[in-house]
Length: 168
Image (cartoon, rainbow, N blue to C red; front, side):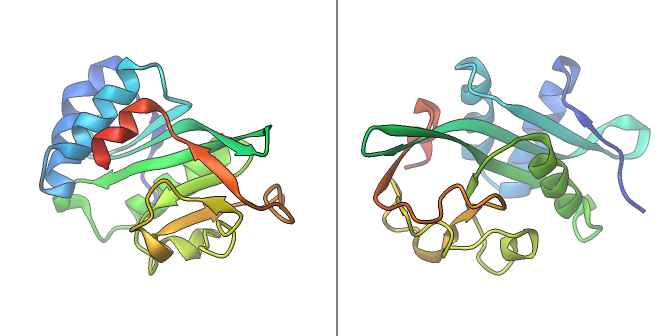
């Protein structure tokens, strides 16, 4: 059964913080969500409803700027994607990623599991034109670029919103 996906609401804030921390087993990603909200760096924020309408999954998209020798290309960062541990394995994360990709135009970047994200069209090959600010990331730094916006470009610098510095 596909969960109901809806925009996050202010009343969801505490539940989102708890589920993101539980999903990652540490507070860093929940702090990132709060910092991105506080910085006004949210393009879309979605939740998957569990029993009783309480969020059991969450995804956030933030605006990025890709700089190709002075030409700015808008893009999005998909981070974080979280599903409460008791709800994992039910397709909730996949439903959230698909809904997030449908919610925004242009390329979307992710720093995530290279064995999981390619099923949605992400690849490290699509990210090759970009200079990752996370040089340690390797193939975990991927792009989703269905319109081919990045094709034929090179040496694009990725400018994440400032709160992503918390994750460095």
